Length: 416
Image 1 (tube, rainbow, N blue to C red):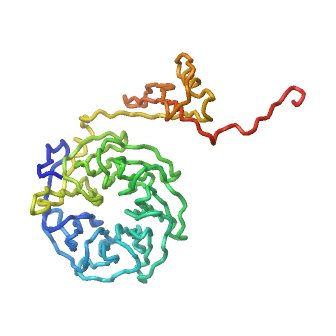
Image 2: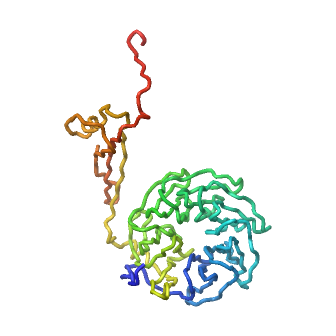
Image 3: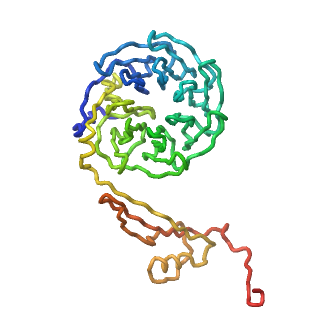
C-alpha cells in the first residue's frame, strides 16, 4: 500500500460518528454486542478491546492470548466473549468482570473464526487445521469435529433462528452442517478462489459470501442454488455484512473500498474509500438493530513506522437518502449460456460453428485452441426500468480424442 491517503468524499447518506483508536497493531475482527451498546475488537497486538459506541470511549482491555488474535464473537445474552488465536486456543471471557472464564483447546492450527449458536449453547470454530469444531460450553466439551474441507476454514456462521451452520474456506467451498448429527447436508460450489467471509440474511433465506476472486455470491439457503453474483470490486472481498432489516449488504475489499448494495435490486448506492488490509483478514459489521455500520480503516503505510492511523470507524446511515440515491455507477445486468462443440479432430466442428452463427460455410483446418462465437444476444426487460443482456455463446474446442465415435447402430425399416 502506498503512503498516499485513499480517503475520498463521504457519500450522501453516511455520517461518521466516531473514530476509535487504541490498538497498536493490525485489527483483525470487530463484533457488536447483542444490545448494540458495545463493540469488541481484536488485534495482532494480542488484546481485546471493548468500546462504548455511543460515547466513543474505550471501556476495557482484555489480555491473555500469548499470540495474535484473529476472531471474536459475543454470546447471544451478551455476557460472554469468545476469541480465537494463533495460539490454537479459544478463550471465553466474562464481559462484566473482564476475567477469563475458560480456555478451550483441541484445534491443531490457528483459530480463524468463532460463532455462537442462536440459543447460546454451542460455539462453532473454524481453523487452519481444516476442521470445524462444535463446543458444548455448558460442559466445556467438544461435541463434534466436522471434517470435509480440503483446506483452512476461514469463516463460520449460524443461520438466524435455526440450527444450521455454514462454513467456508480456502478450498473455495461453502458447506452447510446439521449440528445435531454433525453431518454436512449441502455443499455450495461456485467460487473459483478462497471464500473469505460468509453471512446470513436476517430472515435466514439468503446467504452471501465474499471471495478472493473479487465477487460476492448470493445463495438460496433452502435449495443451495446460486441466485446472483455481485461484481464491481477489483480486489478480494474481505468481509460482507447484512443490515439488521436486510435492506442493505455492505462489503469491504482489498481494493480499498467499502460498498453498500441495495438487496432489492443489488445496485450500489454508496461507496467509502477506506484503506483495506494487505492480509485476507479485515472486517466490517452492521449494528444488530440500528442503521449503523462499523468498518476498519487499516491506516497508511509509513516507512520505518509501519501502519499508522489504524482505527475503527462508526457510521450512521440515513436509509432514506441511501434508498433514494441515484447510483453514480452504471449497473449492468448480464447473463450468458455456453454451448460447447466437442468431438474428434477434423470432423467439421468449426465449419458447423460458422453456419450455426450465421456465417458462410468455409472448409477449415483442425482447430488448435478454441473459437468463441456469439450464437444469440438479446436485451430483456427485467422490471423496475432495468434491462439485462442475455447471450448464448458457442465454443468450438480443439479436437478431443475422448469424444471419438466408438460404435454406431443403424436402424432400417425392417428393424423398426
